[in-house]
Amino acid sequence: MIEQIKPMDIERRSFEIITQILGDRKLDPENELVIKRAIHTTADFDYADNLVFSPHAVLKGMEALRSGCDIVTDTQMARAGINKTILGKLGGEVHCFMSDPGVAEEARERGITRAIVSMERAANLPKPCIFAIGNAPTALISLHEQIQAGKIAPALIIGVPVGFVNVVESKELIIASDVPHIVARGRKGGSNVAAAICNAMLYQIMR
Image (cartoon, rainbow, N blue to C red):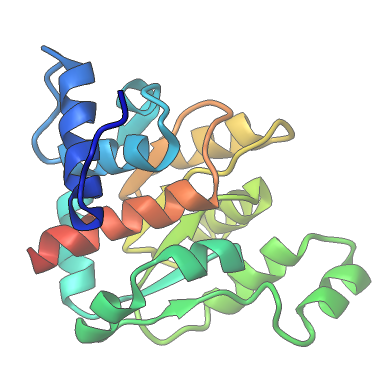
């Protein structure tokens, strides 16, 4: 039977259904809304198991957002999906350098991906940043290398690239690091998940 529900109530009802399906499963209260929003975005309950959180990662991410940090993404899709109205009220903005003039040319000349060049450019931003990576494992690898070299200090890394080549390995680099992180262990992820995790933190701040 089709459920009759007002448009404004669809999201609320969706979260009720997610909670019902999770049943007796106990989620860490700090991470619960991030996990549920990832599930809400994908209809994939594996995120209840494969999201890895460093200690107090969500709280640290929210603290950075409240302080007006920026967000850097590796796709225009993730950039489009992040709630820029809330972020702007907090003093932050979203950056994606993938389409910037010169990025593709530099990547081609150096024989590297645009994601690597984009992360290098992000290192020059004047404010601390949350990095929301949903597509390019080379972005995570670049971030790891720059962290090791002392060139960048992310407030939080959301590492959820999807795919098959270097995806698992790049995520494990971040999980093994000392940087605050939220990582989807394994092959699953995507730009929509990266944006959803950012929004989960933003919505908690504004509620």
